[in-house]
Amino acid sequence: MPAKIYYDKDADLALLKDKTIAILGYGSQGHGQAQNLRDSGCNVLVAELPGTPNYEQSLSDGFKPVSAKEATKKGDIVTILLPDEVQADVFRSQIRENLSPGNMLICSHGFNVHFGQFDIPRSVAVVLVAPKGPGHLVRKEFVDGRGVPCLIALGEGAGEKQKALGLAYAKGIGGTRAGVIETTFAEETETDLFGEQVVLCGGLTALVKAGYETLVEAGYQPEMAYFECMHEVKLIVDLMYQGGMSYMRYSISNTAEYGDYTRGGRIITDQTKAEMKRILAEIQDGRFAREWILENKANAPAFKAMRRRERAHGIEQIGRGLRRLMSWIDAKEV
Ligand code: NDP
Ligand code: MG
Image 1 (tube, helix red, strand yellow):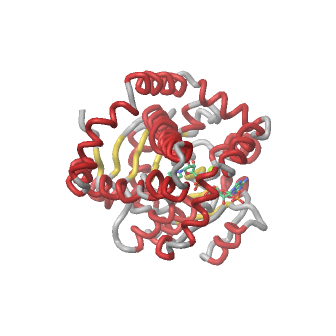
Image 2 (cartoon, rainbow, N blue to C red; image 1 turned 120 degrees about the horizontal axis):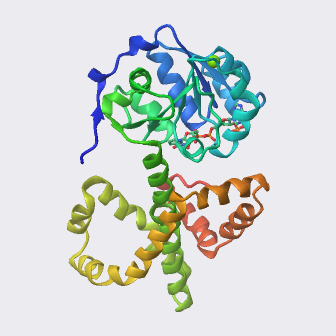
Image 3 (cartoon, helix red, strand yellow; image 1 turned 135 degrees about the horizontal axis):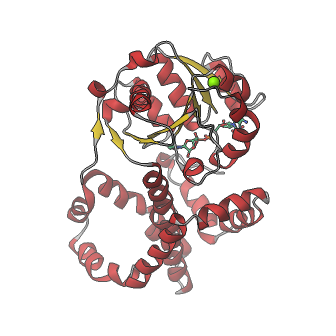
């Protein structure tokens, strides 16, 4: 069934007129959503941690940041845009007891709500308004008179009234200019985790590394392996982004296209797809969420070790040097 999509005409900004919107966290999403809502005429209050770069940023953008506790007390709508892994602690210590009956919570990712990490009071409804793009794009598109598509989902306690408020909020950040797609907390959370684990982050980096290692182990120069297995990913992805796989295949050589059809299925096999199904099941039954939540409770030792090891991989060493040769790519380092 095709998704239900809402546009500007389906949303009424006047619903937000006498409301205070508390934006907790002035990071990627926070800075975009807070400024767009303010420019849409809404009354916005920002919460940030004093002494951090984003605190200074919110000051220079003209906000007077307060604590999450203070902002929650004053807010009628409270948007939690803190890092996902700190949200549960801040919810427990600063948000929960400062919510008033009739307040509405908004989040931009369903993880903590869907996996039961917030003990939300019965008198408070929760709605998901999730831009399908990073915060800087949410801001840039809005300033240019356009918007980034958003998702909307109704959580516990939310009905038609909260849906109208959620759509008004989405209009305030520019989302209804592009389209707001209706979903559920379960669908948003589970597909988001699946995509990042299997295709976008986990799948892609594993594919790139395995290709690079195969060439280097066969005696080819690492520089060549880097260009073929990592650098050129962007060229291919840009073509797919613009016109799907057909356009990408139309743009590459016939030799590359033939190799694609005849070899691709030997790399991503039935066995790979069976593993994808197991990973999806771990997401759906909460095993991944429990693992990640417990990892953070232990101060993330395995996460930090994996990050350290991955940063030392040969492809990262070689890539750093090669990217310096290409002035146009705006090379970054962490
Ligand atoms: P960021 O890490 O960019 O920003 C979070 C901000 O919250 C940081 O400035 C952080 O400060 C601040 N912060 C941390 N603790 C507190 C506290 N106790 N009180 C006040 N401020 C605090 O997060 P994102 O914007 O990336 O993510 C926010 C939400 O949006 C998440 O749920 C995420 O899943 C969702 N989302 C993100 C997208 C993206 O592209 N980034 C896309 C769609 C959804 P400090 O930096 O000092 O820690
Ligand atoms: Mg409040």
